[in-house]
Image 1: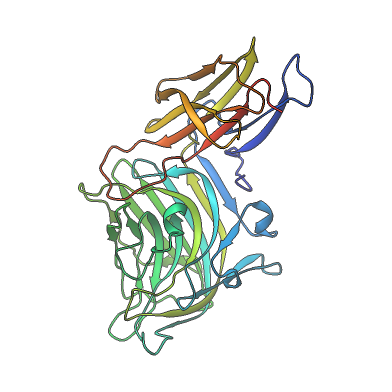
Image 2: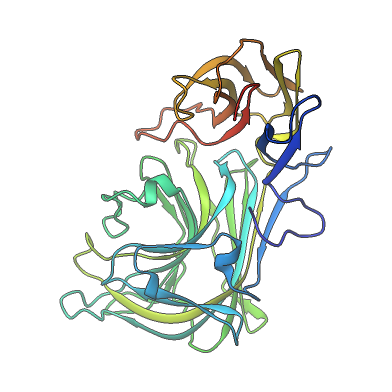
Length: 369
């Protein structure tokens, strides 16, 4: 569940439990559905770290000691240490974004210390990063930010402190699903310690441009050049907001050790892929109806083999036909379920393998226990 949603938005996922007419309370029809408004509005994710974020779905991957919630300052204390494994403090967005979606990310950052070239064998600079990533890509064993070749599906803000002949550089970047980097390089822009920086990234699908603005203690800092995707850019997929401490393997020159705090994260995304979901069972027929989005495919599936893990397709539909309706009248044995699967369509050839299943809404059919 996405935590602390703004007044103009809705939680993108909740769990509803209903007892269907004519059935005992034990036969609950549970469904995981997206709440959307009747109009196309953005979903807003807000995290101010006023209480422990792990209670709201935040998790760590890699070295958990790099991320600590400070209950006094009500912020996340972060260590970016490139000597450690790839490590993330992350939260699912509840949706999947690509280059044809509008979205935005903003957060506050205060550095307390930062040292490039902390490894004498790698005396040049390396990045600290916050942004959006694709969970399935970023957790692969061969994901390596240091090579510049093996870190697909990123939209992130990065900073490289000055070292040897390299000036301090702020570099927002978009990385495609086949690891093509489109950055903007902004230097010299030194981020001083103990100052409060506000960073905002806004991506607009109509011109495929990422605009980054920064302030330092409330005053403009920069300017930051835009990231403009070229016509030959394929696409990207991101589904997670994350504070990223990358391992420097693959970079033969640079390393970093930095400490700071992150606060007031906001992510604005399009409406979820499934909205206004309703369902009912009438005369043994399970019917689902919902509003979908363009560039998504939908399929009704049912479990096979009675294990509730293997599903086979029953019906398919493509948005923007509205509303989308599914039904199944086949009489299933006990402990069988139907689900609605949804995944992004792919209009360009992307030279990497992506996870096919990007979401599933599950509903027990009659006879489920």
